[in-house]
Length: 117
Image 1 (tube, rainbow, N blue to C red):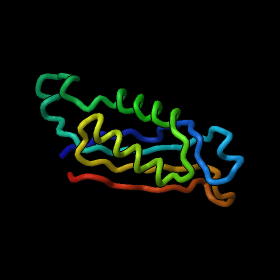
Image 2 (cartoon, helix red, strand yellow):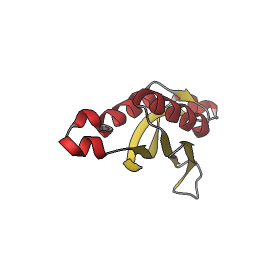
Image 3 (cartoon, helix red, strand yellow):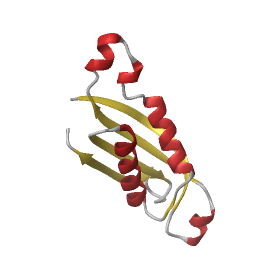
C-alpha cells in the first residue's frame, strides 16, 4: 500500500484542561500518513482517483477550527475517525503535537494508528 502524507500542518483550536485554555485558541502541529493505492491515479494522471491532500488538509483545518477538547488524545481520535470516514482511508497514522504545553519540552502530544494497511 502506498502512503500519502502531510507534514507539519499547523492548526488553531481550543484545546486544554485548564480553565484559561478553554477560552483561547492554541496551535497544534499535525503529521499525517494515510494508506492509499496511488496506482489508479498515476495510471491516467487523474486527481479524482487520488487522495487529494489539499482536501484532506482543508478538512483538518475545518475540524480544528470547530473543535473544543480538553485532551489531544480526543482530538486525535475524532480527527482520525472523521478522515477515515470522509475520504475512505483504510489506515491512518496521526501525530498531534502541542507546543509549549510543558515548559521544558519543545512539544508534547500523541501518535495514533488506526485501521489496516
